[in-house]
Length: 167
Image 1 (tube, helix red, strand yellow):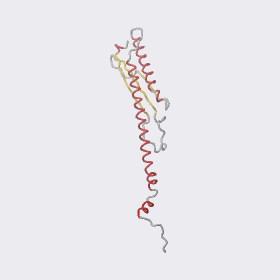
Image 2 (cartoon, one colour):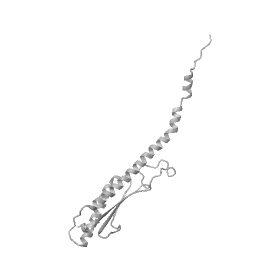
Image 3 (cartoon, helix red, strand yellow):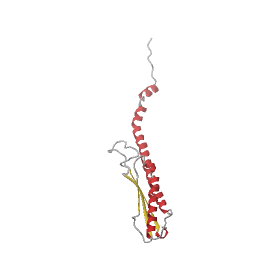
Image 4 (spheres, helix red, strand yellow):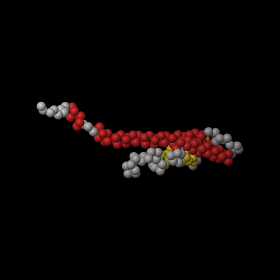
C-alpha cells in the first residue's frame, strides 16, 4: 500500500505562502501612521499655545480699558491713571499665561510707547513664548529631521484710550 502523505490543498499552500505578510505590512506602515499622529499632536499643541497667547493679550488689553480709580486731577493724575491701567494689563496678562508656566516661561509685556494719536493714550499688550527653547512636544528625530515648527509664538493687542476719559 502506498503511504499517503499529507495532501496539501491549494488553499493551504496559499495560506502558508502568505504567513508573515501582516507583520511585514505592519512594520512598513506603522512609522508612517506614527509620524502622522505625532504631527497632529505637535501642531495641535502649537495652535493651542498660540490661541492661549492671543487670548492672554486680549484679556490684558480689556483690563487696560477698565476704569481705574485715581485721586487727583490734572496731568499727574492722568499719568497715574494710565500707569495703573498699564499695571492692570500686565497683571491680567500674566495670570492668563499661568497655564504655560509649567512648560517654559512665557513673556508678557505691556508698553504705552506705541504711536500716540492726538487726544488718545495707547497701550500695547504683547505675549511671547519661545517654542524653540521650550518645545511642548520633544523633537522626535533630533534637529536634523524635526518637524518645521515656529521658533517663537507671539500675540499682540493694542488699546487706544481717549485722554479725556482717563480719569
